[in-house]
Image 1: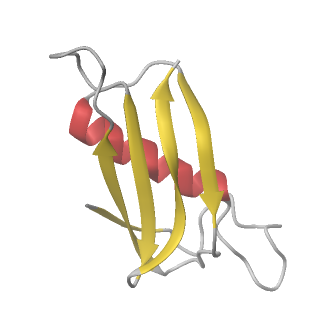
Image 2: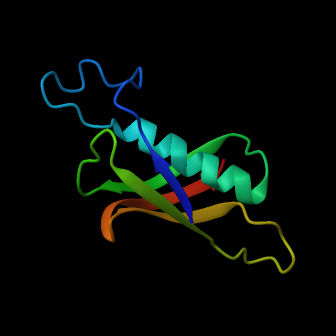
Image 3: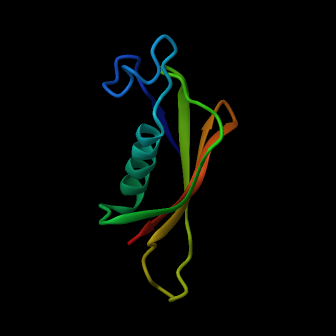
Length: 101
């Protein structure tokens, strides 16, 4: 699992939303991609065939990413698809899949 916190001064927060900022989904997905790259090396072009955002993440809240490689139909092939879950204090905030294009 990869833990992360998005600081209140992150450049994506102004305007998202004034008076009550939430972390944009694209910033959460960036942390997911960083976790996959840390475990499996650099990624090329990707697809996001499925992504669900269930709850907002607020600046300063600790969250964690769990990734799971999806097995290829070809034995011995490197992973090219991963399932992910993003949780905050045990509560699911986002989930989905990332696949090599």
